[in-house]
Image 1: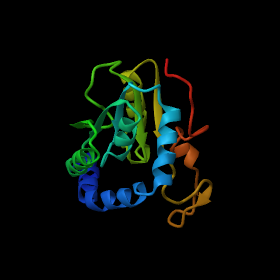
Image 2: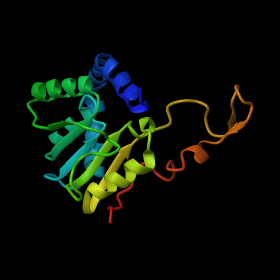
Image 3: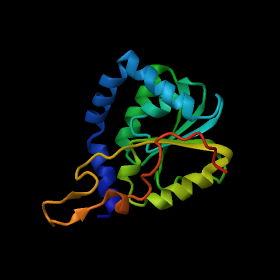
Image 4: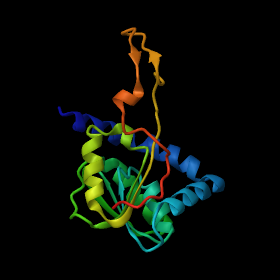
Length: 187
């Protein structure tokens, strides 16, 4: 069984609990308003074509659609996409849902004004390849808007119990640098 098959199976099995977690948070007006503010500041003006990679149950895609963008959500986990379909119908929003790989989305180059993703990068098996592919999908002057974080210990420069060696997260994840939000367009 491939690593990606294992990853996809994990998220398919977690669709119900993930959906429950997202609904409990999104139901809070302040939480929803803060995410709307974050995406509004990170994305182009409204009516942009946005690809939400690793869309899961669609909460980011739906928030972005509410801001007036045309959104396509892509994910390999079909159970997560089933929740996304339901969420869109419940909210009366139109989003195009596509079963596909977030690392290598199957779209023509320069198809989107922006690519978005939340809590995805840490799950990817080929981060550098994903970033190159996403960059190719963005039209000149477009944006790559990612929100992510470090989810598991050990924290930077800590000693692991198993090996006793110093573990440096910057060496293992060199893409984690600088600020979380950048308004620089992709050229």
